[in-house]
Amino acid sequence: MVRFSHGLPSRWVRSVPSVPLTAVGLVVAVVALKAVNLLLLSLSATGRPRQALASALSTWQRHVLSPRTVARRVGIRGGMKVLCVSPGEGSLVEELAHIVGPTGHIEAVALEQPRIAAARAYLSTAGIENATIAFVPPTRLPYYDGQFDAVCCQSVLGRLIDRRTAFAEIRRVLRGAGRLSNTEFLGDPHFVARGVTESIIEAAGFEILERFGNVLAYTVNFRKPMGSVASGLS
Image (cartoon, rainbow, N blue to C red):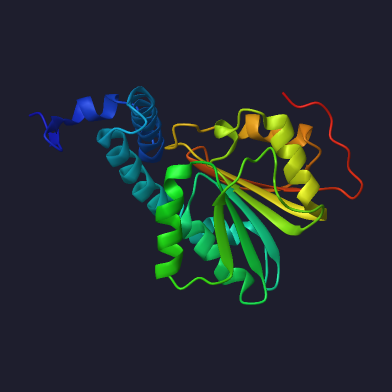
């Protein structure tokens, strides 16, 4: 008599090597997200399909790595002055603003101008009064030297054309021993792998402090050494 397990002969089930479900899920997620990335990049920048997919990805990103988690990973506290650089994430700015409180302030730089109106409306609805957001070229930040206690970047590296100048500017406006936190998410069309991120930011004169997350979504925190001088950055 042939015994069955889950609808298959038991000898077949025993002969199939076991694969951890988490590993299978990870592979499937990576392949699916890469396919979506290619589709996003192939669509018009102003087309409705791209906007719909971008909105769906943003929703899924908040589920996988919430803005609150990203904000908490930065390592900031009440009263701090923080620079936030992102495509234009109002929800991330909100969470950072809650952490620094009424005695702190968030200056947000949006890399994608079309997102600014929505981000400002989001912050206004949320009642956030200790944060501002503007479309500012990251290669010419309108802030003075050492103005910020920390810098929080999300989905930034892949959007920068002149990384050398941008990170020189970020280093300039960050105080000595200040923290630079960089988060990347695989669902973003401009995703940059962690190893590449670390090489680029270390070359800009920062030291790695700590790492969070996994291949799908990660955060790496850096520190600006006192009196640091950056080496070459491509």
